[in-house]
Image (cartoon, rainbow, N blue to C red):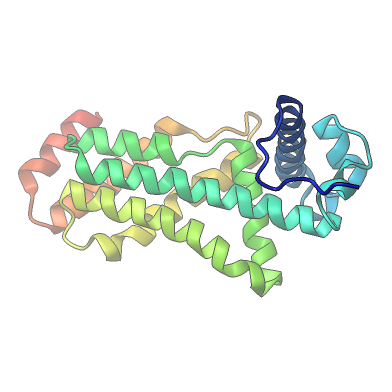
Amino acid sequence: MALADPNRTPTARTRRHRAAGAARRDALVQATVEVVAEQGMAGITHRAVTERAGVPLATISYFFESIDALAEEALRVFIAERVRVLTALSETLATTDHDIADLATLFADATAADRTQSMAMIEAVLHAGRHPAHRPAVSAALGALRQVAVTTLSAAGASDPEGAAGSFVALIDGFALHALAEETQQVDRIGLRRAIQALFLGELVAAGRIEDAVHLAAQST
């Protein structure tokens, strides 16, 4: 039997097969994130994931050596995407001039994750707390959020962006956690924006930028 030529250009049929396989694999990963958000890590089973993804029960075994391997890949992909989005936001804020009030709005809107993202991130943090091997990836996501805060505070003229960033991150996380207990399960973006503006006011006063603080206060009313 003749061996396949590794340099041979893939046929259209082969390309379609690969694309279909990649789509099924991506569906499994996305479905796993959604299952994690709804049921926690313990809810990840072959049936729960494949039913959510709309694929046959045996599909997981075709792409992953175990359900745990799928769970790890799903968290890795989810966190990597979160880092990518936050890093892009940080770079945009660092290279674009914005009014201080606009910065508060941009920061609030960009960091107010939806329910699935919030729940998945909480589960990722809890999982990392129990499994040290996952801590670097989760730390990268938390670090990316903190960097967005540092960049925003720097753009707003805070006297100590690094020192104040923790308060902003805690504020965002607090709003996200409280939203999960509300009927709508959506972050109160208006409330978050006002809270961020209040922190901005404190930072501006601390930096001696009283006129800017008064200007921001006038826009916040």
